[in-house]
Length: 287
Image 1 (cartoon, rainbow, N blue to C red):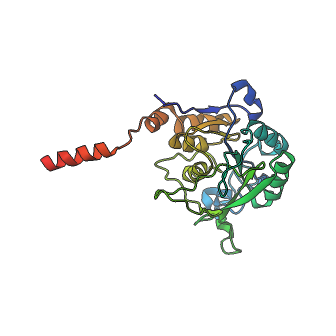
Image 2: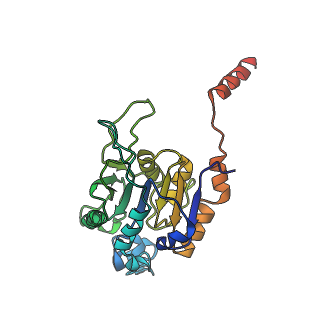
Image 3: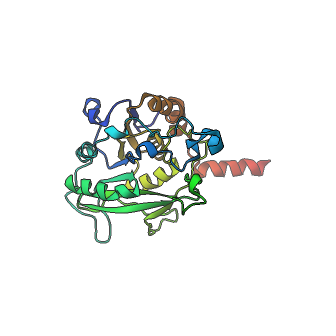
């Protein structure tokens, strides 16, 4: 039993979404190609055999991450996203509060931010602001003794007119200010399989999804890759629909990230109640 939450990954291009009859989304979140071309593995030890330049270049040297990167059409991507975002609510939020308007979050390279913002405006997403993610590591190992290395990731939040849905209530029940930077903590390999070269941590995605959606809302990931967005949504009881055109990533995601067994375990995980704790305490006292 999977509650009423829908988690669906399609081995298809997002432009074919119509054939699947998916609903509109409160949040669309996507990690678009960074257009690194043949320098995708530059500064990364993977450029060399066993990460050592003494061994010569590996098969990844001079290669792009994916052979589909150059086929990515950002205009078509935004066409799809703005069609599948929920409609703008007629009323805004109360004074000092956000509305139930939808939002997009697009992960991209720092250099792509102006392009993403421009394309958003062309498609009616007139407002945006950047997000910065801070790592405590860098993939630019080969440049460590040559320059300051990159240890950040970037994303852009885009919305039409009204401020999108915004959840900032902490565990203490109070509203808290949320800064535009987040810690980028790597997922535990025991908990989440590493499937995709540019896979985003599930826990980072969960934090963003918690902020911009409620339980039962719909999230769409048009370029799902490892299905980490879908996994994050499953754990948060959000419905999620994703598209991944590469068959190998699709298969690995279905087997290792959102298999029926994994989803059953997530959805059927029993919540511990106060009554359970009281009963356990009572049994302990009888011993």
